[in-house]
Image (cartoon, rainbow, N blue to C red; front, top):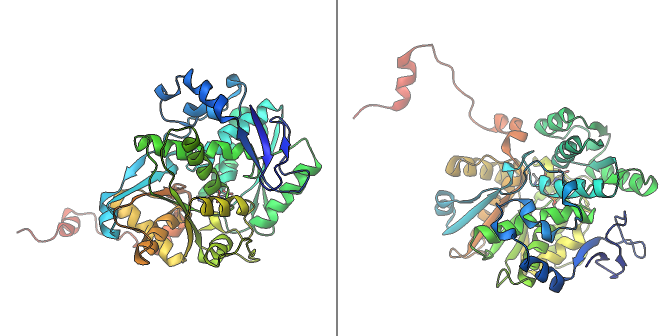
Length: 409
Ligand code: F0G
């Protein structure tokens, strides 16, 4: 009922093969289901009575044995109606899906609960990834929960401290590579092909992104079985936008929603190969050798899942846009001040992108918009302390504080 399939040549593989790319043509793989059989299975299941979470959608996941599930209670994150921010920007129905509410503070947990469960099903006890920080933190946590070895490769220098602290405390072997994310990813791709004892959990792993598709399922369920008009997603290595589109497409195929949203990918100006390809109408990306942005999570020059991301954007009749570091920081502060949501810079790029697209008149004020905020702001507090007003010091007396209330009328 479930198999892996190459997105380019269509070659099929068994669901329990340890394989990260097509053996025939080298392209990306995705998990395929027999939707008629899945419909029958779902009719007999009580999934709609379960609380919102990744595992509410267990029947939609490529896992055989529920007893092996490695979970820290992921998913079920808030879809926050943002009236104040919507008014400010000029849209009537704005929602933020706040993925910082996940156990390690990012959407990666949706993928890792499924990916690490698959590793256990496959009998693997070594897992590895390259990461700009969040993937490392998440994999380290799930490996700890499962009691297996974990190695994470991070780029030297540019990684948010909170994420490094997480990966370290969960007990992963943290390896700092003298190079950027793209170089670190190349190493783990080669190593996992060469040495079959280690299981790769970057988003080329087709099982991991299956977990991430639950983000789309949840949005539909939170909007009373409707898809929004537009979903705006920060894009780095491009696994997530592809996963979220797969989730919407599957819910459509299964009859749970009656129309599909448009997918909008946002990249930082200094690391925007996908957005540039979309804007120029190209079918291929031009990789960027030295990607640069304050949003270190998406500081990626050669996104491994670019083909899936372009497909998601084109199939959904969506688009992609770039934002500057200044626009990202401004959006981060706006979301915090107007909605009480503190997200990391990469996450705020979806809000910055929304603002830009409204200014460009590419978004209608009556549309239902969901911005995905991918990770928690506390992961990278340094950025805030560099750009925001510092606390001011006063003498320890009431009157020094009372002046802050202003004159009484
Ligand atoms: N937002 C945050 C907070 C991220 O950490 C990432 C990716 C993205 C957006 C982009 O998602 O790669 O699926 O397009 N972080 C990866 C990491 C690369 O290693 O943590 P994507």
